[in-house]
Length: 464
Image 1 (cartoon, rainbow, N blue to C red):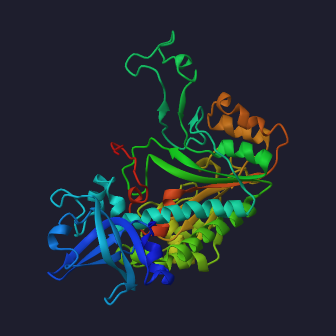
Image 2 (image 1 turned 180 degrees about the vertical axis):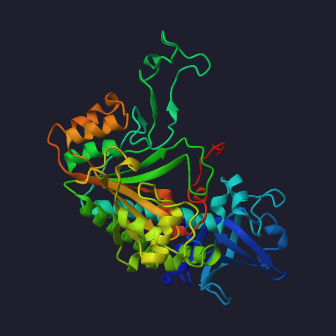
Image 3 (image 1 turned 180 degrees about the horizontal axis):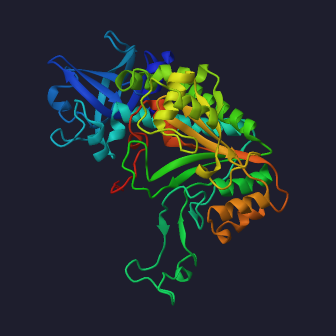
């Protein structure tokens, strides 16, 4: 007999009355001298299936190894359940223990566990309801990202993880080297001689695939990247990781308005997909962690995003008499999460797209506006999280881009190929970046970014 997963057993009415085989991990076992009730979960759904083992067929001694955490295979008849909480259950005919779990040492016994403790056992936390839900939703969002772009004619491009340039001065970078860390070769001036390194130059782990994505967009029209990125910032916060995943679409001929339209459509699509395909997991997370989760998701889907300039936003914040901000606001300062959330949650009461930021607080490649002071940047702001997307129309003028490179002290030899794109058939183009874990924080309602990725990497932690 072939195995049927728990999700199908709980939802397929045609299987009722038939003999079935289920395999999974024991969540709980309870009972009395007449019958044992075993809750089994195989990861296919947040819901368990109840296995009923009559004492006549299964004396207590025969089930002694059926403990929380053990892996079992159960053969029996799927029948309508008489108890509350489930529609069907399995009347067991055969129970085989595939792998035992010692009750004295298995850490996931039936009690509450803190999220901090579960991070210490990341190899086991996917078996909890919480992380099973998060990982299923992570898959659903990954699939939705690819489906969204594929259905709209985008091409997925794999950009390099090892790079010789810092895409935007986005932060400290992890160095990639094969040189002896204690006694590396030196130049005559006493500096590390990277010409003797594996790649013959100083290389790092990428902070973004954007620049290479622009290369592809200038040939394929509309592309997106979806890959790991790395920041060596010593940030021990609930919103930062050293290794995370980024989604970065880039579209030739798109200007800033087109970019905003794409970002709004993309985010509303992803949230709608979660609501339609992850209902059980969302309900669990809403009930257990964030009572406003479902309301916030519907808030994003049901409201058209407000579009406002940075300059107007600063005036709104400066005139917000009742708001007490930790960080002062002046034109030219980078807005903090508290400012972004005020605009979304208090002032406009809808998602917000801020545009036209001061050039001095944005990256070199953003297109300069006619005022000479601002660039065609955009940030999408969400309730509860602040910025979720950052993007811009890119500067397509070689002369203007060269001026910005020099103003910001960027080494021209590192980005010569990027500059050369503007020499040969330059075109207007735009794109943005969505941090996948930021999206996961929003759609799951989890409070710490370390809990929406299977194996978080952060300062002083590279376990598992």
